[in-house]
Length: 382
Image (tube, rainbow, N blue to C red; front, side, top):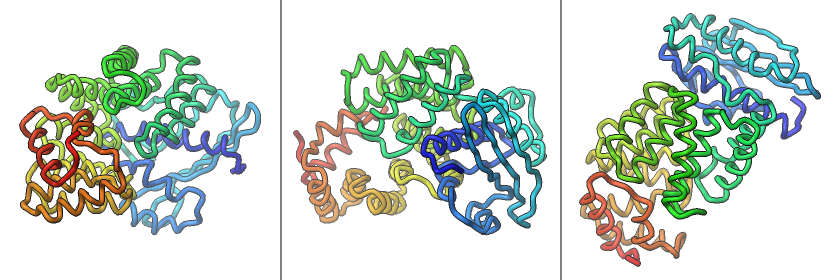
């Protein structure tokens, strides 16, 4: 409420943790933060928002932080009628922010009459870290990590999360996400050589899982590392566990879809990315890339092409290599060549060899065929 960017991070983090916790409950469908945050700071008709998102209930509120004190106001709205179901205001010391989160999530589950299993009751308590300063750094890092996957964005996120981890080295979520960035580095070659980056990623993933075996992000990080190393059975096991422990997390579903598609399980991959889009109607552009990839690998080429075209429309240049492959594989070489020429204008340093270093398929013949399609369309091999 103050207009202070630092407090905005604080409020965003509170919402992020509540969404993450609620997404672990099988009795709820919880819309992802990418879609709910578009309404932040706007005067909206709550009943219209409910229709747009396809939900029965909306949680809204505000946060004010003053020195060592916080005020959190929260209310649960019936989106069909616009009436209040529950409202509360919390005036607490700053260190109580995590207790406030727990109270809100428990009340929400109760008010929405969700029947909780014993395991879900245990998972209802969630914070990234018990250290307020580390938590603030964590949510600041999320603001960069939630943007496009680039070296610049992930460098900023990593710097903030490493500072947070120094304050709370036993945090499972912090270790999981720091590990994920290092595994991303192993794929894209931003800082370290691949073995070094993988070792760092695995060390953090192992730590995260030792603290909390139910942490979906840690399972994803471990599975991502397994994929890069070609340990496909282990990768699939970790990814399935991630989806089991966070069944309604759009982010977990998206990464799981990507890894399962690479692992030769596109039929299992497709409903996951479709679910992620359902959970996040205002989904990030990269979801279209994962959707198109799953469709192409299941032979649904026209739907794949539509997804890649939409991806490029939202983020110029993204999805074009996949579009080239799809056109080439459906005997449309003219369109493949035109798309390749446009891509080279946007990414003149591209080579098929460089692309291959970032791609993974359990079936090597599939990857070789994709590389051949790019080369046939006129993209430079080396």
